[in-house]
Amino acid sequence: MNTPNKLTLIRIAMIPIFLIVLYLGFPLHKYLALLIFVGASITDALDGFLARSRSEVTDFGKFMDPLADKLLVMAALLYFVEQGQLAAWVLLVVVAREFGVTALRLVAMDGGRVIAAGIAGKIKTVTTMLCICIMLTPLTFVHTGFFFRVNELCTAAILITTLWSGTEYFLQNKDILNWKY
Image (tube, rainbow, N blue to C red):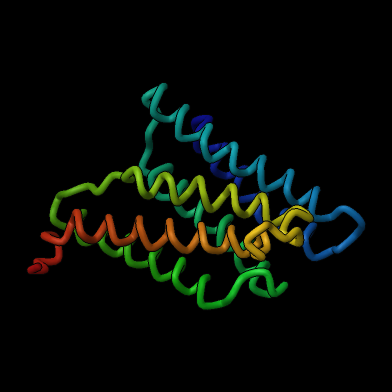
């Protein structure tokens, strides 16, 4: 097993540790959870970089890397829904986008076409991971000059980038589903 795939497995192993730390609720638990989340996010960037730069891209990595990313993000977002920091309907939009883009990629693959991650998808991933980091800090309870909590601004950023990237994937690949516009 190559190093990028090992990093992906480490990221997957970090998910239950991240959740256990969040739910134990000891003093400063969110800061430790933040460190774990940041570490897992770094493995995401590092495994992709190593796989491409060393020509170590594998079918295992193509499957497990995006799955690990989705599991990590969904674990954090589910926690925020349970804690009242994120509306459930926002999580539903995120999940629907992930299912939709994955289904689109599967249909494309069946036709011999690969849909690579676009710039909007990459911006969505970075924005979501950054917002999760912010939402794990006490900053989420500070009011801004616009009377919004930082938490609400992060929720808006996640929602906007999710909708933008999902729309981009479908519009740029509408021919796969034979949609007529």
